[in-house]
Length: 290
Ligand SMILES: C[S@@+](CC[C@H](N)C(=O)[O-])C[C@H]1O[C@@H](n2cnc3c(N)ncnc32)[C@H](O)[C@@H]1O
View (tube, helix red, strand yellow):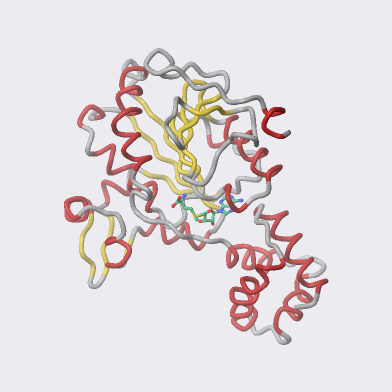
């Protein structure tokens, strides 16, 4: 690939989605964008694609960005966050939100929907939430993956990854070779398109945010910007879950770790669960960056 073409994709992907692509990942550009160019009937491979995109082509730009997203996910991915949600956070929210009986949860970068459906099943399995007004908002940048999430249809392989058999039988119906989420579970979730690089205050304020396994694709300044965007729509006594390989430490001061529970964060100005288990202070950013 010509250097100028690599630069073109590098800049476009960073600007449109935050994705950082390094020269060692040239093979990814080729394996994902050559089929796209072919499908679009574009001659000349990636060079032809770049030529067609120069000067602006909104639909092609979207197709390139979507083709380059990594949508890897699974039901109850990594297990621990969902265990923490059930064992520590649900009791805390039942206590703190007991009067208004309402909860808003955001699955940011929800991919094909396994994450929000896992959260919905956990809520269904907690009888204390009966009669509560619960809203799960699930967002992603990719229209294609959101359409899949909304359809809620999964292959045998997908349901075998992390979904306990009792939950499969209870919340899904068999459709030929596949399994479809039952309507009452689907109705708990609203799926919306949202780019984490944009202002998202129109989504409203959330008690619980899952933003897992997406910051890993961004550079440090972009991670910091996205964390500030998330903080703007996380309630002061809300919580944030990040992926196992992600952290706020050394990146942003707007969130701090909740005790020593790996992967759970609260706003820097939060006292959520403070009386139960003291919040471990995050080291000052200046100290980490040295
Ligand atoms: C690896 S998946 C993570 C799915 C799920 N959160 C999990 O942990 O299993 C990453 C998702 O982030 C989405 N994504 C990438 N960049 C994004 C952005 N700038 N705004 C919103 N979503 C983005 C991708 O489309 C993809 O579906």
